[in-house]
Length: 151
Image (tube, rainbow, N blue to C red):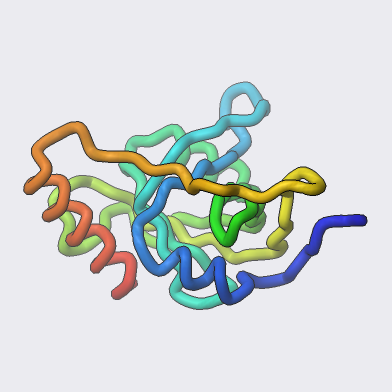
């Protein structure tokens, strides 16, 4: 049986993307033309058809998107794994209200595909913790997520 394919976020994914979370982002490398995978956590779904995420504006991710806008965000949520593909663009080279030089990236969703292998489910979602000053991390996370919500 083929996995479900949607044209926008299903409700559990939309809800999961209302807060910071671990995801992987696949882009096409601007130099080699090969795949490039990065982990990010500053991601937000303003609606079921778009994602916003923040990355350092000097990041390879930014250069990759500028050369080839096709990207895939891999999300583990709702007891499964989803590949959210679409076209990304740099919405702002420097986000307002954030002390770091972060680019705001907008992803227009083309397809949401459940890519979990047959006959299985995710029993525990990935967790991570910031390894620098907890207070500073919480403050920065709040600033970035607020900026993503207000974009």
